[in-house]
Amino acid sequence: MNDPNSFLVFSGTKTRYLAEKICQSLGCPLGKLQITHFSDGEFSVSYEESIRGRDVFLVQSTFPSSDNFMELLLMIDAAKRASAHTINAVMPYFGWARQDRKDKPRVSIGAKLVADILSVAGVDRVITMDLHADQIQGFFDVPVDHLYASGVLLPYLQSLHLDNLVIASPDVGGSKRANTYAKYLGVPLVLCNKTRIRANVVDTMQIIGDVKGKNVVIVDDIVDTAGTITKAADLMKAEGATSVRACASHCVMSGPANDNVMNSALEEIVFTDSIPYTNGCPKVKQISVADMFAETIRRVVSNQSISSQYLV
Image 1: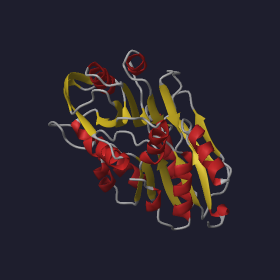
Image 2 (image 1 turned 90 degrees about the horizontal axis):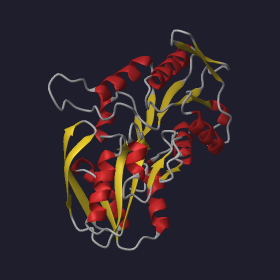
Image 3 (image 1 turned 135 degrees about the vertical axis):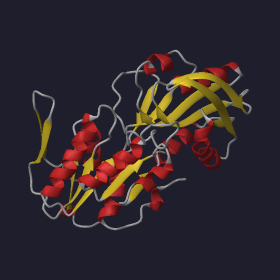
Image 4 (image 1 turned 90 degrees about the vertical axis):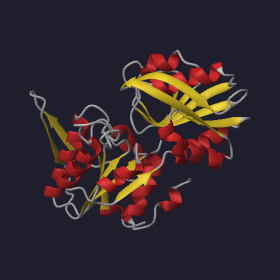
């Protein structure tokens, strides 16, 4: 690895827990950054050490609220004005990723707007994980290192040693991801076909495939209100599944999500720690991606390929 003094890692407010684990894995201290809040809701960012000529890595997931995204933009701007050599945004969770296209007239494409704002702010590279749609990488004019949570979720699933395992997708849109898991594990794939009344509310759902007598693992990227994934779990259990679990990359878990999970047929739901989770649902388990991001930072600093990190 290159000289560890050539780079520094900093963190925004809400992702400090992950940045500290990344720094522990890297064997370096977390950089000194001060965020000052004012009574009107504004805040300012200042680096408390010199970053001139250094490669800086700014760890910040942009989950709600929007303050997290604004913090990241101010961190990027301050780094640019402090003559950092390169500015790398480490965004384990990339917010607004579900707004990746015009799915009806007169709507914004939020993911593209966020990409543009980051570029204008002065970012040189983005390191993220499990974007809602892979093509979001094309919204950027800077390099994007796109990691996959399968690197930590697949080993966990293998450690369960489940017989008669079936991988399921909660909707047709996630079939590619679920199929990748199924092929890697050498097990069948089951799909759910759903229709929505409106955002976050599922109307009807049908299962395509056989789950009777099977141990089912539902694979998704984001669990928000958990309405879809719990409805799928209940339906599979009703159709004779022996057990139903779920794993997903990003633990948004907003609104009624905790109650939905607790009252569902799910035995457990496993996430990465790209977003902090503090609501204490006993069915929720988190696996850290700190080592994966730390290794990516190592390879970026030393100009090495990151493709060997991908299991699938």
